[in-house]
Length: 228
Image 1 (tube, rainbow, N blue to C red):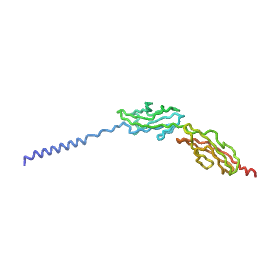
Image 2 (image 1 turned 180 degrees about the horizontal axis):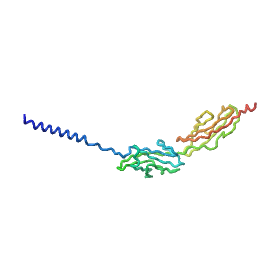
Image 3 (image 1 turned 90 degrees about the horizontal axis):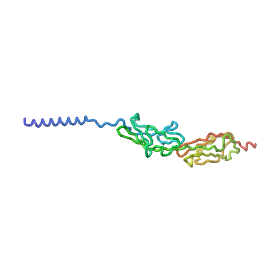
Image 4 (image 1 turned 90 degrees about the vertical axis):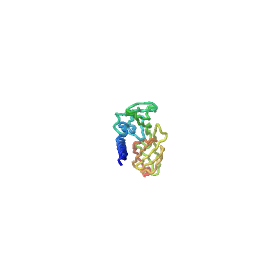
């Protein structure tokens, strides 16, 4: 019997060694995640106090600012920000776009790096769009008096211009009625009773920018009533 004891001792030693090895493996920490690296970055276009991260649209007549926001927040001071369009245009958390910019003055890529060389990037496109503007040539004009009857088709006309869009979309308001008239810039409307009326037009371009014609007050005099 006693000649088997060394075998059992060896088995016990082997079991202890295996347990120690497994314990040592369990104590080895995972590779630490970098603490000062941004997971992603968002670009905002800021102009006239309005921040836009969706359409990234600016108007050309005013200076605009592009602003980077990294996630998680609070890492800006530990990261380097580089703004590109084909080549490097500038660095920093913000980038200023001048009024009436040329295309090559507007970045379309942002690269954010940490001190270890890790980086995230964001590709984007800035839309430069001028809003439509009404021309001071519309009918009826402020304070006009129109003569006719409820069956008279009175003319209404207006016009706006836009640097980017040849065709604009209009909404006509006469009193409480709204008419989606599309690209029309002139209509005729009957059914107006004698008295005070209001006239207004809203214009929208393809980028969603709008202008509104000032509210016009005009008068209708019923010619049949006047003859009585």
